[in-house]
Length: 287
Image 1: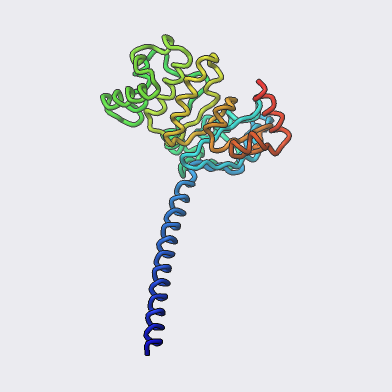
Image 2 (image 1 turned 45 degrees about the vertical axis):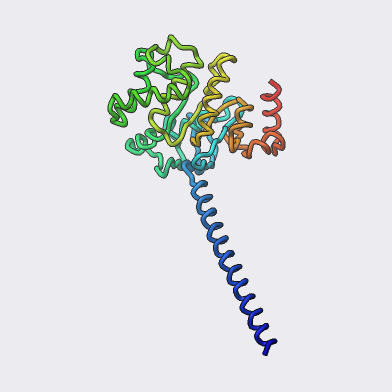
């Protein structure tokens, strides 16, 4: 009798233990599933390019480009002059038209449809080599014109937003100056603030430091680094390899209109897979 009672107690204990393990396993599985869902959301594509081809006359400038960018991802595109880097990002907001392939930005396919182009450009900010500020407007007016005319934002709200972003790029004291009264580095930071005033989902940078004196490059790269840390989706064409190594999630190397290689910064710089990549890195890092 005592043996049967002891056996019953042991069995009930094992059953409770197994039940607890099963519930714990279910909770763990549930948490893992939630994590997987979150990771899937984190990997959601905001830009998708497939079989993209572009010609300038007979010159085949982009050759069967396939590329995706996830929300919040920072991608650096590098390569020698004439490799198609700038043309690629200019296609993403339809500053250049492509002849073959598809480009989707935030779920919208870029075609000749003007409404679609406008929709994409509302969500994509672009920084150029030469600032492209309106010379006849003050810095403040440069920052408020698009939110007021495109976003239909009240002027008072647009001005408040402009000062907020001028503060963020560390030049609030320049609000009432004209662009030609500012240095090159200051003008590029003004251009960044102007883009941010439109609350873009993606920022494109086309060699933003190439027109700057060496001492002004750091102040622009510092602003871009802060922007990257904030979670902005960024595609940056640049030869600033230090920036690529420290900020990028992925580095894409282009040559001859093709994507030759892409990898995370650590592997891209320490273990390049193609001779063309090795040659390029030896040239840009040596200088």
